[in-house]
Image 1 (spheres, rainbow, N blue to C red):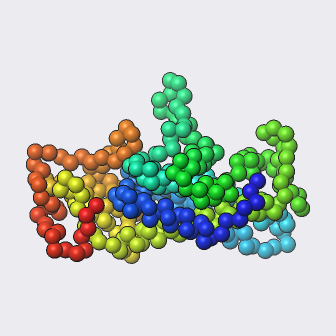
Image 2: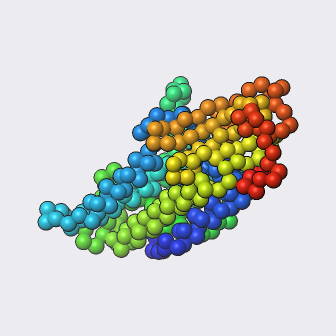
Image 3: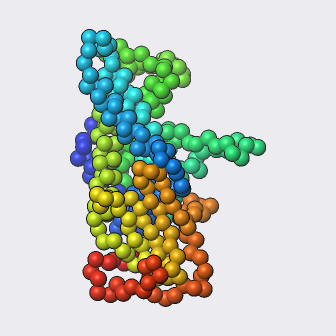
Length: 311
């Protein structure tokens, strides 16, 4: 059990470095990661947004005071929030993709699913990797990338014994210890260490979501159009608050592909995923493509436009 304390500044420096490095090395793949690019989805099918709303509810209960509440209630709510936090697939996926970019690999829609399994003779059944498996893979990736700060943070926020015991109702909270009875020999750890684990995780996950939001706002206020190879143009799409929520790729034959994430769901067109999980586009008639940049089929000259960059 960790006795290391992770501050908000340590978490912020680590996560900010991951995003900065990703945008420096591959802005397009970093944009995909920021937008959590995936397939079509209707409204109210985003577990990440649901979990963020859930945390607001839990925070209210965490602060609640009543004579009817057990002295252990804050521990139980804190552990419930902890288990929700460390199980968030959106965070696992983002971290894995940021590390992939760091190592020179492209965005992958499900970068950790290779650790899952499909039962024999059941092609429509899939068992995703466990939280323990995913955190180990992310830690291994960080170690290979020599990102020791991230490895240290992961070691300080994830404890599978605590997560498993609480999630499976195999725990007892005393005045001084957190105990479990299954999964081998019974054991216990001091509540001070559990408190440290919960605090570390809250510092990291609150920082991660805040910086994710910060980068969405920052990129949303950057240049709108970017030149891509093969005379394609990337257009960044924002909501009414100028917060990034999608992109459109314009092709020189007049076609385009787009991805947009809103409260109404995820809309995408002419976008598909390769077998290796990377993103590709349905360009249309290749023989109609020209060696000039176009937006909505109209030629554009970016030569004198300072607001336009090249990726």
